[in-house]
Length: 201
Image (cartoon, rainbow, N blue to C red; front, side, top):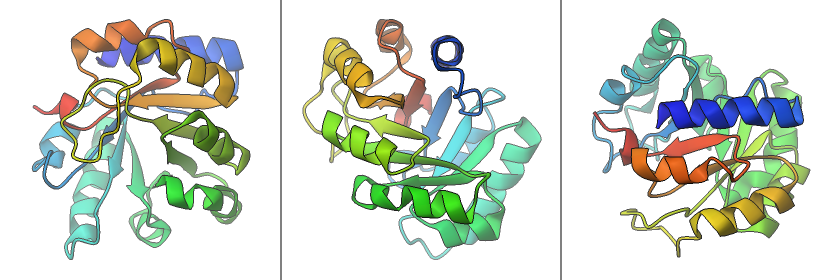
């Protein structure tokens, strides 16, 4: 999966020129589906990013600090889900906003110009809104059938490619992507791949 993600990232940089800062692979933590995110992070390729979603956990800062240490050691980026205060406290590289908060992207970028700000999107319209609101990239789901309880109807590679063309910016695909299915995404125009349990050790 990492090789396909890197392939997509290289093509996106040649095509758009402005996405060189974006990692080709995003690992999204999840308390239920990735109970040991540190083990997964420790095996990610250099240049990937961890998106730490604490969901209000009381030990969020401690776990985030451990992930930050792994990221520093491994040459990874660390983004924090929906919590700019935690991102600032940890010295993270940016934040990931849920779709409902995507309109805050420009405000976050203004306060932290060096941060990467990504946003979730579940439709072409949502992707366009998030990018217009200043997000560096959107993470679109659901690409393939997923075990996530919140997964919507999978769009497949063809519909995803259409969405990418219409979005007008950098797009990651998320949902049901494993090593085999990742290869189906090479012609979609994605900037990279995002995964939750698809990257478990």
